[in-house]
Structure formats: structure tokens, C-alpha cells
Amino acid sequence: MLKNSTDATLLANQCCTPLIFLDIDGVFNCQLFYHSQQFQDYKEAKKSLRKSVKAKQIERLDYYASQICKERIQWFNELCNEINAQVVVSSTWRSGKSIEELQEIFDYCGGTFKVISKTEHLGFERGIEISKWLKDNIKPETHGCHYFDFHKYAIIDDDSDMLLNQRFNFFQTDNYSGLTPNTCYKIKRFITGRTFNEA
Image (cartoon, rainbow, N blue to C red; front, side):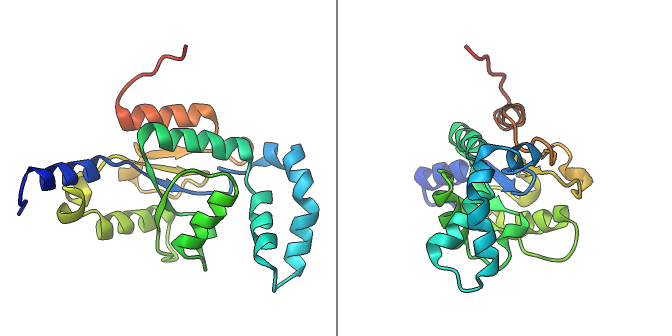
């Protein structure tokens, strides 16, 4: 039961907050990136970190920075900012890391978006893991709607193991070019329902 109009406004805002289920490999990195100068700059740090089990924090973060394209994370920053989206990490990078650790990694790599959660590792298709997250977390008392009425989410992934009912929410990248401005534009149009004209 809503106590007042303020409660109703809060729930409406929560329901309207878009979510992005984010993969990393094949999104923030790709073959084009691996042949770029940025990746070359971090090769030695990567080799050193792989050999060191007890790496220091800055070395660990440098390793992750070596795997994320600055240009692509900036495109993603702009997308999240423009549609006011929050992020749920569905990448294998989530394994063994807390939400705080994932946020720290993205912050260090130039991310300005907010990570609010991660999907559970079930050992099934990623689409099933995303579906379970929605069912467990999108509720009338927290978002103003049931999970089956919540459609303002996008899945960015280079793999295709999503569910049929997620086909309109799924924006597939590829391992060659990763995230592109075109993909970001399509997501922005899908979430907002508007066409944007570039000046």
C-alpha cells in the first residue's frame, strides 16, 4: 500500500530506471582492441600478473585495465548517462568478485556507471541466469511492477545463449569489433522509444 504521492513517485522512478546486463569479453575488448596500442602497452603487466598469485592491488587493477578498451568503456559511459541506466554484471568476470570489487575495477578503468548487482552463476545459459535475476529482484514493492511487466532492460553480450522472450532486449556484439556506437544507439532508441538526430 502506497502511503502518499511521494511513495508513488519513488516507485514509478524505480520502475523507469533502465538496467543493462553487461558482458565484458567481446564487449569492452575485441580483436580490434587486441591489435591496438593500448593493449600492447599493458602486455608486460598482464604477463607479470598472471605469474603472481599474490599480486598487489594496483597490479591487479592494472591487469583488468589491460583488458578493457578505454574508447569502448567511454561509449558505454555515455550510453548509461544518457538513458540513466544502472548495470548488472552478467560476465564471467563476476565470478569470485563482490559488487564493490567489480565497481572498483570499472572505476579504475574509466567507468562512470553504477554497478548494482551481478547475476548468479547457475551453470545454465546466460539468458536463464538473467531471467532468474529479474524474477528475484523486480518486485512491485521495490520497482512498482512485477518482473514480467518490466521491459526497460538491455542485454549486451557477444554470446547468443539468451531466451526467446529476451530477443527484443538482446543486443549482440561480436568478438571482432566489440561494443560500437551503433549498438549504443540501438539500445538508446529501444529504451527511450525515441529517434535521435545527430547534429
